[in-house]
Image (cartoon, rainbow over all chains, first blue to last red; front, side, top):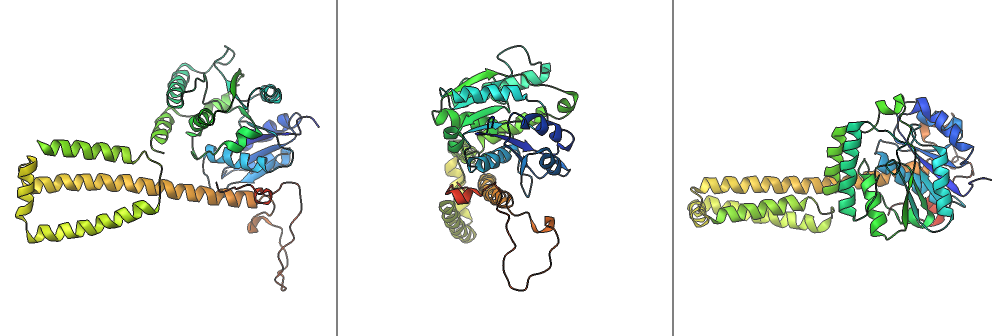
Length: 223
Length: 145
């Protein structure tokens, strides 16, 4: 079976409208998908299950970081799981990008593949969003000593070594910087690869508010 | 003006205190010692109120009450820093609990989501469907790390 050694980890919070489509589109390429329902108040879990994903439900809302860690813990326990991809539930990520990232892992030269919006010009975030992102990325680079062009991209791929070594303690949005930090500190081999993030009207209406950047920076200092 | 040195040093320490990872019993003991020391100090102040004025003069502060006020502000900031650490510790515990529940329930859904069953009288557990998703604990993996 194609990609039977790979698990997609999808943190899921109130995406009942699109999660069915997202899972259906992905499951043809990635048969193993675990959606971590982070205390959704809509029918997200049901839609995800109906579309063919395994659903793990948090009894309370913890945050995206916690959902990713739960998903990784679950996937690591599954037989034959060798590769793990964090994938957004809102349809912003492309299955093709995830596939090429796993292929890069299969070649064995790297443990972690980070997707980046800023390695080429395909993705067009808004001007303000771009400015905020660049600031957050610069901060993450400074504190981790690594140099990434897009540390806050939700599309990442790990092999088993990397996934097992990660221990995400930041429950909410600071997890992105924490992952970068840990990859650097653990000395894992990593590479960045260009990905195309689709900013649909739906996903644009959600997304991280600028005020949240204040929260992220605070959480990084005051762990 | 020694008071300025003392205050700046104390404030810097307190700002830094919140950045360390939360720890447990050591801080508790220190807090308890601090409480006892505080009680002793409070009783002494009541018995010898001029002590504050003398201390204030040594540090370059006008009145004993002003010094007491500075001390109160520092104590309050310390309490905030400590509170935050304990809060982070509790948040970590809750996260682990919730994660454990979430992973356990993949095999057996929570009570309110199961199909209605007639109550058993023999005390045996409900049947568990032996489906593919497996509990992390069965693989010897530490889920609570």
